[in-house]
Image (cartoon, rainbow, N blue to C red; front, side, top):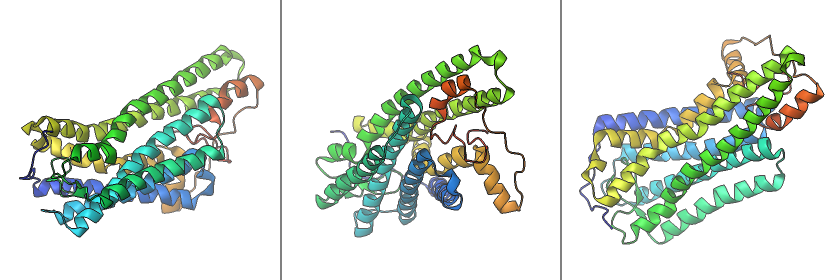
Amino acid sequence: MLLREPPATPVSPWERGLVLLSCALSVLGCCLLLGTQARWPELRTRPRQLLSCLSGADLLSAASYAYGVLKDFEASSWDCVAQGALSTFANTSSFFWTVAIALEVYCSIVRGSTGAGLLCCFHLVSWGVPLGITAAAVALKKIGYDASDVSVGWCWIDISAEDRLLWMLLAGKLWEILAYVTLPFFYILIKKHINRAHAALSEYRPILSRNTSSQMRAASVADKKLTLIPIIFIFLRIWSTIRFVLTLSGSPADQNWLLVVLHGVGNTFQGAANCILFVFCTRVVRNKLFSSLCCWRHSNPEPPPPSLETSSQAEAPLCKDWELQGSNGTGEDLSSP
């Protein structure tokens, strides 16, 4: 195994500042996501409930990373272990919840049904597996100072542990790499299903009302968001994987300042990215938020979707309990930009 021993990868003050800014934006973004869920019950669709769990994990992750960057650890200590354990649990849980959302959306749109049993399974796996891994790592004293070779200022798996590669895989990298494969797979299947539904609607376009065209535009917006979800995740997380591989190979390129910054920002910006996508880029949520802040109410909601049998047959699988394409009960489409 070619993981280097200390000296540590240098992390300059301005690099730490960028990472801390990213952490702060993610904390604010997660709080905003959780706040909109608490404030407006009509937004609590199943996918958004899962998104709230993901936001909770991202909030813990960003807060723990911020502490590690501020503390600037130079050796293993009790707070280094505590910070490393919290970030390991939260980060690994975030991977599981991200995949859980993809599976939920797939079942809702393509299969047309989800059950309470699946939700219980999501909670059991997405909280239980990371907790078990983290508890085992702490009990076996595998978490500690990692010289920033596979982090950016925070603690993770002890760089001096003999079986550190195994624990780095179990404590995050294995699940991260699996997410790179799983997320595009699910979203490709979903996009194929949406494209088939679009084709079915297009056949009836001359005889359908303009409301159905609005529905198709809404589905198109959702289609774009579905494309962005795995792209954003992979773009943010890939830099940490690249540094991990470079560190394994013993390459000095893993200390490149640009790669270190991309790693630090990418690992901590997930909460902010989700906030941008599911708050500011979702019209209903955005309007409710701005109305609450500026004492202004959106007074022109879109009419409810048509009740034509042909339209409902083609579009129902796309709209059932999927927040990007569902209705909030007032006729406003949650997918609109």
